Length: 395
Image (cartoon, rainbow, N blue to C red; front, side):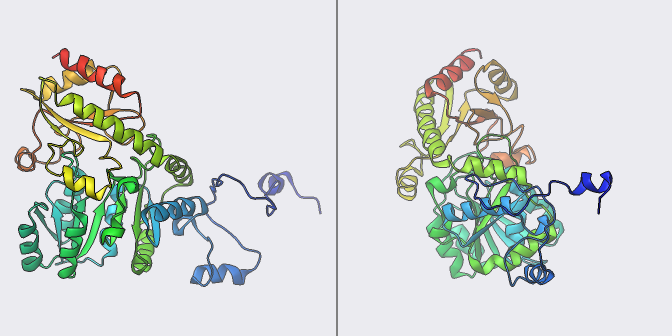
Protein backbone atom coordinates (compact mmCIF):
# COMPACT_ATOMS: atom_id res chain seq x y z
CA UNK A 1 0.00 0.00 0.00
CA UNK A 2 1.43 3.36 -1.05
CA UNK A 3 1.58 5.85 1.79
CA UNK A 4 0.91 9.57 1.41
CA UNK A 5 3.58 12.22 1.60
CA UNK A 6 2.22 13.27 4.99
CA UNK A 7 2.87 9.79 6.38
CA UNK A 8 6.19 9.32 4.58
CA UNK A 9 7.53 12.63 5.86
CA UNK A 10 6.91 11.39 9.40
CA UNK A 11 8.01 7.76 9.20
CA UNK A 12 10.46 7.34 6.33
CA UNK A 13 14.03 6.83 7.46
CA UNK A 14 13.23 5.56 10.95
CA UNK A 15 16.46 3.92 12.11
CA UNK A 16 16.69 0.13 12.12
CA UNK A 17 18.24 -1.70 15.05
CA UNK A 18 22.00 -1.12 14.73
CA UNK A 19 24.42 -3.98 14.18
CA UNK A 20 27.36 -1.80 15.19
CA UNK A 21 28.62 -0.13 18.36
CA UNK A 22 29.49 3.60 18.30
CA UNK A 23 32.78 4.48 19.97
CA UNK A 24 31.33 7.71 21.40
CA UNK A 25 27.98 7.55 23.26
CA UNK A 26 25.24 8.86 20.92
CA UNK A 27 23.02 11.80 21.75
CA UNK A 28 19.54 10.34 22.23
CA UNK A 29 17.09 13.21 21.79
CA UNK A 30 13.94 11.08 21.97
CA UNK A 31 11.51 11.98 24.73
CA UNK A 32 9.69 8.65 24.62
CA UNK A 33 10.64 5.06 23.75
CA UNK A 34 8.78 2.03 22.43
CA UNK A 35 9.38 -1.73 22.37
CA UNK A 36 8.57 -4.53 19.90
CA UNK A 37 6.33 -6.19 22.48
CA UNK A 38 4.09 -4.50 25.03
CA UNK A 39 5.17 -6.95 27.72
CA UNK A 40 8.66 -5.47 27.47
CA UNK A 41 7.36 -1.94 27.91
CA UNK A 42 5.34 -3.05 30.92
CA UNK A 43 8.43 -4.71 32.40
CA UNK A 44 10.37 -1.45 32.07
CA UNK A 45 7.51 0.56 33.59
CA UNK A 46 7.33 -1.83 36.55
CA UNK A 47 11.07 -1.87 37.09
CA UNK A 48 11.44 -5.58 36.34
CA UNK A 49 13.60 -4.78 33.33
CA UNK A 50 16.05 -1.96 32.68
CA UNK A 51 15.25 0.39 29.84
CA UNK A 52 13.69 3.72 28.97
CA UNK A 53 10.11 4.85 28.50
CA UNK A 54 10.08 8.62 29.03
CA UNK A 55 13.00 11.05 29.23
CA UNK A 56 11.98 12.50 32.59
CA UNK A 57 12.39 8.99 34.01
CA UNK A 58 15.83 8.54 32.45
CA UNK A 59 17.51 8.50 29.05
CA UNK A 60 20.51 6.71 27.51
CA UNK A 61 22.85 9.70 27.08
CA UNK A 62 22.19 10.91 30.60
CA UNK A 63 22.62 7.38 31.94
CA UNK A 64 26.09 7.20 30.38
CA UNK A 65 27.08 10.35 32.26
CA UNK A 66 25.58 9.06 35.50
CA UNK A 67 27.50 5.79 35.28
CA UNK A 68 30.74 7.66 34.62
CA UNK A 69 30.33 10.02 37.58
CA UNK A 70 29.37 7.14 39.90
CA UNK A 71 32.51 5.28 38.83
CA UNK A 72 34.75 8.27 39.53
CA UNK A 73 33.12 8.97 42.90
CA UNK A 74 33.11 5.31 43.97
CA UNK A 75 29.34 5.35 44.47
CA UNK A 76 26.72 2.73 43.72
CA UNK A 77 24.89 5.07 41.35
CA UNK A 78 24.38 8.69 40.35
CA UNK A 79 21.55 10.82 39.01
CA UNK A 80 22.00 13.90 36.84
CA UNK A 81 19.92 17.07 37.12
CA UNK A 82 19.48 20.27 35.17
CA UNK A 83 21.57 22.33 37.62
CA UNK A 84 23.69 22.04 40.72
CA UNK A 85 20.97 23.67 42.82
CA UNK A 86 18.45 21.07 41.61
CA UNK A 87 20.91 18.35 42.62
CA UNK A 88 21.26 19.85 46.11
CA UNK A 89 17.48 20.10 46.51
CA UNK A 90 17.00 16.49 45.39
CA UNK A 91 19.74 15.18 47.69
CA UNK A 92 18.19 16.93 50.68
CA UNK A 93 14.72 15.56 49.90
CA UNK A 94 16.15 12.06 49.45
CA UNK A 95 17.11 11.98 53.13
CA UNK A 96 13.41 12.04 53.97
CA UNK A 97 13.54 15.51 55.49
CA UNK A 98 10.14 16.99 56.28
CA UNK A 99 8.37 19.77 58.14
CA UNK A 100 9.67 20.30 61.69
CA UNK A 101 12.96 18.52 60.90
CA UNK A 102 16.12 20.59 60.88
CA UNK A 103 19.41 20.85 58.98
CA UNK A 104 22.90 21.53 60.28
CA UNK A 105 24.93 23.41 57.67
CA UNK A 106 28.30 25.09 57.32
CA UNK A 107 28.01 28.84 57.83
CA UNK A 108 30.21 29.66 54.82
CA UNK A 109 28.24 27.94 52.06
CA UNK A 110 27.81 29.20 48.51
CA UNK A 111 25.31 32.05 48.64
CA UNK A 112 22.51 30.37 46.66
CA UNK A 113 22.74 27.23 48.80
CA UNK A 114 22.47 29.31 51.94
CA UNK A 115 19.45 31.14 50.52
CA UNK A 116 17.78 27.82 49.61
CA UNK A 117 18.14 26.64 53.20
CA UNK A 118 17.57 29.88 55.10
CA UNK A 119 14.57 31.06 53.09
CA UNK A 120 12.87 28.33 51.06
CA UNK A 121 13.39 25.42 53.45
CA UNK A 122 12.54 27.73 56.34
CA UNK A 123 9.24 28.51 54.58
CA UNK A 124 8.56 24.76 54.44
CA UNK A 125 8.99 24.51 58.20
CA UNK A 126 12.54 23.15 58.08
CA UNK A 127 14.99 25.14 60.19
CA UNK A 128 18.70 25.34 59.38
CA UNK A 129 21.39 25.86 62.00
CA UNK A 130 24.44 27.48 60.40
CA UNK A 131 27.60 26.66 62.35
CA UNK A 132 31.36 26.87 62.01
CA UNK A 133 32.14 23.29 60.94
CA UNK A 134 35.76 23.83 61.94
CA UNK A 135 34.64 24.15 65.54
CA UNK A 136 33.89 20.49 66.28
CA UNK A 137 32.53 21.28 69.72
CA UNK A 138 29.96 23.62 68.20
CA UNK A 139 29.06 20.96 65.63
CA UNK A 140 28.64 18.28 68.29
CA UNK A 141 26.65 20.54 70.59
CA UNK A 142 24.21 21.30 67.76
CA UNK A 143 23.99 17.64 66.78
CA UNK A 144 23.12 16.78 70.36
CA UNK A 145 20.64 19.56 71.08
CA UNK A 146 18.93 20.01 67.69
CA UNK A 147 19.04 16.41 66.38
CA UNK A 148 19.34 17.52 62.74
CA UNK A 149 18.29 15.18 59.96
CA UNK A 150 21.15 16.30 57.71
CA UNK A 151 24.64 17.77 57.96
CA UNK A 152 25.49 19.74 54.79
CA UNK A 153 28.87 21.23 53.95
CA UNK A 154 31.32 21.79 51.09
CA UNK A 155 34.55 19.84 50.66
CA UNK A 156 36.29 23.14 49.88
CA UNK A 157 34.28 26.18 50.88
CA UNK A 158 33.28 28.95 48.49
CA UNK A 159 34.96 31.44 48.39
CA UNK A 160 37.32 31.19 51.39
CA UNK A 161 38.65 27.75 50.41
CA UNK A 162 38.47 26.19 53.85
CA UNK A 163 39.06 22.44 53.71
CA UNK A 164 36.50 20.28 55.50
CA UNK A 165 37.71 17.30 57.50
CA UNK A 166 35.23 14.95 55.84
CA UNK A 167 36.16 11.74 57.75
CA UNK A 168 35.93 13.51 61.11
CA UNK A 169 32.66 15.31 60.38
CA UNK A 170 30.90 12.27 58.91
CA UNK A 171 31.94 10.04 61.82
CA UNK A 172 30.66 12.61 64.30
CA UNK A 173 27.35 13.12 62.46
CA UNK A 174 26.70 9.39 62.20
CA UNK A 175 27.05 9.05 65.96
CA UNK A 176 23.84 11.09 66.13
CA UNK A 177 22.12 9.31 63.20
CA UNK A 178 22.50 12.40 61.02
CA UNK A 179 22.89 12.00 57.26
CA UNK A 180 25.82 13.74 55.58
CA UNK A 181 25.68 15.52 52.21
CA UNK A 182 28.90 16.95 50.79
CA UNK A 183 29.03 19.46 47.96
CA UNK A 184 32.33 18.52 46.34
CA UNK A 185 32.17 20.85 43.35
CA UNK A 186 35.46 22.60 44.16
CA UNK A 187 37.44 19.44 44.94
CA UNK A 188 36.04 17.09 42.27
CA UNK A 189 36.71 13.32 42.34
CA UNK A 190 40.26 14.11 41.24
CA UNK A 191 41.13 15.33 44.74
CA UNK A 192 38.73 13.42 46.98
CA UNK A 193 35.78 11.02 46.87
CA UNK A 194 33.65 11.87 49.94
CA UNK A 195 31.60 8.63 49.83
CA UNK A 196 34.81 6.75 50.57
CA UNK A 197 35.25 8.93 53.66
CA UNK A 198 31.79 8.30 55.10
CA UNK A 199 29.48 10.74 53.31
CA UNK A 200 25.98 9.51 52.43
CA UNK A 201 25.46 11.62 49.31
CA UNK A 202 27.76 13.79 47.20
CA UNK A 203 26.56 16.63 45.01
CA UNK A 204 28.29 18.52 42.22
CA UNK A 205 27.46 21.46 40.08
CA UNK A 206 28.63 19.62 36.97
CA UNK A 207 28.51 23.00 35.22
CA UNK A 208 31.89 23.63 36.81
CA UNK A 209 34.92 21.30 36.68
CA UNK A 210 33.14 18.10 35.64
CA UNK A 211 31.99 19.68 32.38
CA UNK A 212 34.75 22.24 32.40
CA UNK A 213 34.06 24.20 29.22
CA UNK A 214 31.35 26.67 30.24
CA UNK A 215 28.73 25.30 27.86
CA UNK A 216 26.62 22.83 29.86
CA UNK A 217 24.52 23.63 32.93
CA UNK A 218 23.96 20.62 35.17
CA UNK A 219 24.23 18.87 38.52
CA UNK A 220 24.86 15.34 39.76
CA UNK A 221 24.11 13.42 42.95
CA UNK A 222 26.16 10.30 43.70
CA UNK A 223 24.95 7.98 46.43
CA UNK A 224 24.85 4.62 48.16
CA UNK A 225 22.26 2.09 47.00
CA UNK A 226 19.88 2.77 49.91
CA UNK A 227 19.04 6.15 48.38
CA UNK A 228 18.19 4.77 44.92
CA UNK A 229 14.42 4.52 45.32
CA UNK A 230 13.74 7.87 47.03
CA UNK A 231 16.18 9.79 44.85
CA UNK A 232 14.88 8.28 41.61
CA UNK A 233 11.30 9.08 42.61
CA UNK A 234 12.26 12.65 43.51
CA UNK A 235 14.08 12.98 40.19
CA UNK A 236 10.93 12.00 38.28
CA UNK A 237 8.61 14.24 40.31
CA UNK A 238 10.95 17.24 40.51
CA UNK A 239 11.30 17.27 36.73
CA UNK A 240 14.69 19.00 36.75
CA UNK A 241 15.90 16.66 34.03
CA UNK A 242 19.29 17.07 32.38
CA UNK A 243 18.86 17.33 28.61
CA UNK A 244 20.68 14.99 26.20
CA UNK A 245 22.90 17.68 24.70
CA UNK A 246 24.02 18.89 28.13
CA UNK A 247 24.60 15.28 29.20
CA UNK A 248 26.74 14.65 26.13
CA UNK A 249 28.82 17.80 26.60
CA UNK A 250 29.29 17.05 30.29
CA UNK A 251 30.34 13.47 29.59
CA UNK A 252 32.79 14.67 26.96
CA UNK A 253 34.25 17.15 29.43
CA UNK A 254 34.47 14.52 32.16
CA UNK A 255 36.86 12.45 30.08
CA UNK A 256 39.59 15.07 30.49
CA UNK A 257 38.80 15.94 34.13
CA UNK A 258 42.02 14.49 35.63
CA UNK A 259 44.17 16.18 32.99
CA UNK A 260 42.44 19.52 33.45
CA UNK A 261 42.43 19.36 37.26
CA UNK A 262 46.13 18.62 37.37
CA UNK A 263 46.76 21.74 35.31
CA UNK A 264 44.25 23.85 37.27
CA UNK A 265 45.94 22.87 40.54
CA UNK A 266 49.45 23.55 39.26
CA UNK A 267 48.47 26.93 37.86
CA UNK A 268 46.54 27.92 40.98
CA UNK A 269 49.53 27.20 43.20
CA UNK A 270 51.79 29.27 40.95
CA UNK A 271 49.32 32.17 41.04
CA UNK A 272 48.91 31.96 44.83
CA UNK A 273 52.66 31.90 45.40
CA UNK A 274 53.02 35.02 43.27
CA UNK A 275 50.10 36.88 44.85
CA UNK A 276 51.38 36.40 48.39
CA UNK A 277 54.48 38.45 47.42
CA UNK A 278 52.53 41.30 45.82
CA UNK A 279 52.45 44.43 48.01
CA UNK A 280 48.96 45.34 46.73
CA UNK A 281 47.47 42.14 48.17
CA UNK A 282 46.31 42.03 51.79
CA UNK A 283 45.66 38.27 52.02
CA UNK A 284 45.71 35.14 49.86
CA UNK A 285 43.42 32.19 50.59
CA UNK A 286 44.66 28.95 49.03
CA UNK A 287 45.11 25.55 50.73
CA UNK A 288 48.28 24.91 48.75
CA UNK A 289 50.13 27.62 50.65
CA UNK A 290 51.95 26.39 53.75
CA UNK A 291 50.50 29.37 55.63
CA UNK A 292 46.91 28.24 55.02
CA UNK A 293 45.37 26.88 58.27
CA UNK A 294 44.20 23.70 56.50
CA UNK A 295 47.30 23.05 54.41
CA UNK A 296 48.35 19.92 56.30
CA UNK A 297 44.81 18.51 56.29
CA UNK A 298 44.47 19.15 52.55
CA UNK A 299 47.83 17.51 51.87
CA UNK A 300 46.70 14.42 53.76
CA UNK A 301 43.15 14.18 52.39
CA UNK A 302 44.10 14.99 48.81
CA UNK A 303 47.25 12.85 48.90
CA UNK A 304 49.28 15.77 47.53
CA UNK A 305 47.57 15.59 44.13
CA UNK A 306 46.86 19.30 44.36
CA UNK A 307 44.79 21.84 46.27
CA UNK A 308 42.11 22.91 43.82
CA UNK A 309 41.89 25.40 40.99
CA UNK A 310 40.47 28.44 42.81
CA UNK A 311 42.49 31.19 44.51
CA UNK A 312 40.78 33.86 46.59
CA UNK A 313 42.61 37.05 47.47
CA UNK A 314 41.95 40.42 49.07
CA UNK A 315 43.13 43.68 47.52
CA UNK A 316 44.44 46.24 50.01
CA UNK A 317 42.20 49.24 50.72
CA UNK A 318 39.71 48.13 48.07
CA UNK A 319 35.95 48.21 47.80
CA UNK A 320 33.57 47.72 44.89
CA UNK A 321 34.95 50.69 42.93
CA UNK A 322 38.54 49.45 43.07
CA UNK A 323 37.61 45.81 42.42
CA UNK A 324 35.55 46.76 39.36
CA UNK A 325 38.42 48.92 38.06
CA UNK A 326 40.78 45.96 38.51
CA UNK A 327 38.39 43.66 36.63
CA UNK A 328 38.02 46.12 33.76
CA UNK A 329 41.80 46.40 33.43
CA UNK A 330 42.20 42.65 32.88
CA UNK A 331 42.79 41.54 29.29
CA UNK A 332 43.05 37.74 29.63
CA UNK A 333 41.04 36.84 32.72
CA UNK A 334 37.28 37.12 32.23
CA UNK A 335 34.93 38.57 34.88
CA UNK A 336 32.10 36.01 34.96
CA UNK A 337 29.75 34.32 37.40
CA UNK A 338 31.06 30.79 37.30
CA UNK A 339 34.19 28.73 37.90
CA UNK A 340 35.88 25.53 36.83
CA UNK A 341 36.16 26.42 33.15
CA UNK A 342 39.29 25.91 31.08
CA UNK A 343 39.42 29.71 30.88
CA UNK A 344 40.43 31.84 33.87
CA UNK A 345 37.37 33.53 35.38
CA UNK A 346 37.22 36.11 38.15
CA UNK A 347 34.30 37.06 40.38
CA UNK A 348 33.48 39.58 43.11
CA UNK A 349 31.63 37.58 45.82
CA UNK A 350 29.95 40.66 47.30
CA UNK A 351 28.49 41.46 43.88
CA UNK A 352 27.74 37.92 42.63
CA UNK A 353 27.98 34.59 44.48
CA UNK A 354 27.15 36.02 47.92
CA UNK A 355 25.10 39.11 47.07
CA UNK A 356 22.04 37.47 48.64
CA UNK A 357 23.68 37.71 52.07
CA UNK A 358 23.54 40.83 54.20
CA UNK A 359 26.79 42.70 54.83
CA UNK A 360 26.72 41.40 58.40
CA UNK A 361 26.34 37.80 57.20
CA UNK A 362 29.21 38.22 54.75
CA UNK A 363 31.39 39.76 57.43
CA UNK A 364 30.61 36.95 59.86
CA UNK A 365 32.06 34.34 57.49
CA UNK A 366 35.06 36.43 56.44
CA UNK A 367 33.97 37.84 53.07
CA UNK A 368 35.44 41.33 52.77
CA UNK A 369 34.73 44.24 50.42
CA UNK A 370 38.11 43.82 48.72
CA UNK A 371 37.87 40.06 48.18
CA UNK A 372 37.93 38.48 44.72
CA UNK A 373 37.66 34.84 43.67
CA UNK A 374 39.83 33.66 40.80
CA UNK A 375 39.05 30.40 39.03
CA UNK A 376 42.44 29.67 37.51
CA UNK A 377 42.23 28.27 33.99
CA UNK A 378 44.59 26.06 32.04
CA UNK A 379 46.34 28.88 30.17
CA UNK A 380 50.07 29.34 30.74
CA UNK A 381 50.38 30.40 34.38
CA UNK A 382 52.87 33.11 33.41
CA UNK A 383 50.25 34.79 31.25
CA UNK A 384 47.65 34.61 34.03
CA UNK A 385 50.08 36.13 36.53
CA UNK A 386 51.11 38.87 34.11
CA UNK A 387 47.47 39.85 33.59
CA UNK A 388 46.82 40.02 37.35
CA UNK A 389 49.92 42.14 37.90
CA UNK A 390 49.11 44.64 35.18
CA UNK A 391 45.53 44.85 36.44
CA UNK A 392 46.72 45.62 39.97
CA UNK A 393 49.15 48.23 38.68
CA UNK A 394 46.23 50.13 37.18
CA UNK A 395 44.78 50.82 40.63
